[in-house]
Length: 332
Image (cartoon, rainbow, N blue to C red; front, top):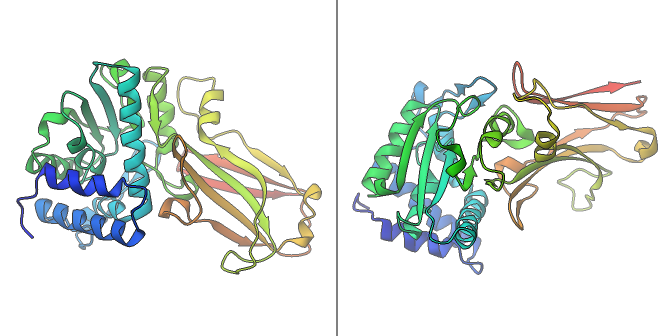
């Protein structure tokens, strides 16, 4: 392995990853090879013990991943492939809708490998697509710049910004066709996907394509645990629908919390169930979804139910200040 990796090499590997017929084992091998290339070019392994690489970055609402965790996201195999497919589909769709235009992508939270530039750009020409990158971690952005330069992809970059996406005002915001912001975790915990959208979406054009398009958190009940082969989920309700919540927001800034979601217990016959499950479903783009356990983003939360269950309702609150988390309380 050497540092003479080219955009053509990346293009070949990504083109293979985009094939519907590819086996999971080949996906993992190709992404591991890409990760190894990126490690060598940046000298960032994603697994070292430097404090500055491990620490999360505090934003105005929530936290951004530290360098190591951001680098490791590339190795979330199904997530990487589905986001790659989504980005390529979205760019091609925008090209059809905006012929003879350069497609502009605003990439919020690119991390040190900026994979949805470094893997996507070689599939197009700089005249076809341009990227503006925003990253709160200045060291992370420096790694991304190094990688982009070594891959000879600098011609695809319009702007680099070091700033907090939760508060950033985008210059020439209406020119962008696609907003990419993979700044989330399971149950929308800690990371900034929701407040970022609250900030950026109103600045962008109405026909902006957002990747991931939406995130849902759903509540289900079950008799058997998820690990049991007999497990069957009985879906109860959607706790959070991010895009719906943003559309219903009537103020110009992100609220401190989303409206509470109250679920009545008595109609559920809860005594026949033993587990309450919260699932994070990521609507990436069009018909592309990340579902339960396909990614670290969609690991379910399973809670045992103590009987007799003497409460009348569950109230869920998604708060964004002072920190970002989904909370619940039981009411008599």
